Length: 351
Ligand SMILES: [Zn+2]
Image 1 (tube, rainbow, N blue to C red):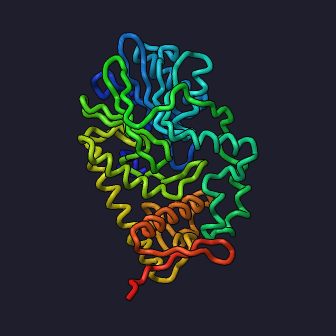
Image 2 (image 1 turned 60 degrees about the horizontal axis):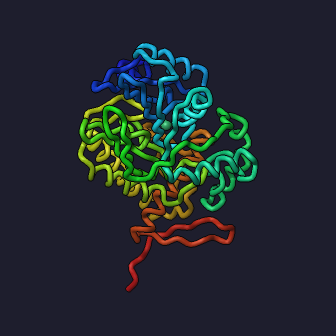
């Protein structure tokens, strides 16, 4: 591994990082290809611990968390609250497992209710595919990918116990911890119910997956789906910029000095993607699938055909989200083909 690559993954090392003010970053392991770890943040006081996010329900993650808390002088039973940023398995599932044994309370954004319902339908077999975004493939012109989906449905960590949180948190709620107040800010986009937790007094932003320092968060990758995910996400980024700047405490990646700096980079990234998407439609690519194949993917500028199936499903859905923003902005029109696929065209000014 090169030096740069080693630095890039330094944050995944199993070490507790003291961030001052009684806040510690605890990276927990993940079994996912691209994502090696998830940060959870422990906020401690003499009476106990509150955690931002919980990690994935895995023996290795639970052991790591137990060890990290012990290092700080606490036990799992001292965890009072899990303030979870969003419903994804790597943030939520360990909280459910630990709540069975201890009395901790789980808080989650109220707009994740639809995802909770869709997840249960998926597990009961009443909600169609288990791969998020698979339902929409026909509409996105990518029906040919659906035949291979069973490959994906057999794999993956399966967590079955999707239980409700104790508290569905509303936008703007102030959470009174013993040492500080966190403001829950609804930031839909990554998922529809994502929350960031802002401590304006301490100048700290617990950003979940809304703002990540090294990677671009996926958009609308959620069981309930969200056609307007990118529109929502861009609004959420603007909303984040309207808050006072704060140190960035992300769920994946190292802590950085400024949330705003990264938000501006993410906005610039999506501006670039929107321009590429518009150029592809101008060149005659009409369905989200065709457009996705016409543009490059990941930091390494890979071809669509070189992505694995899972990444292709995500790429087609991301492309559709960009097309919908161009539609809302009046730059494109959309009609439906005879087989039910969305066809986009550049809007020509009417004379
Ligand atoms: Zn995550």
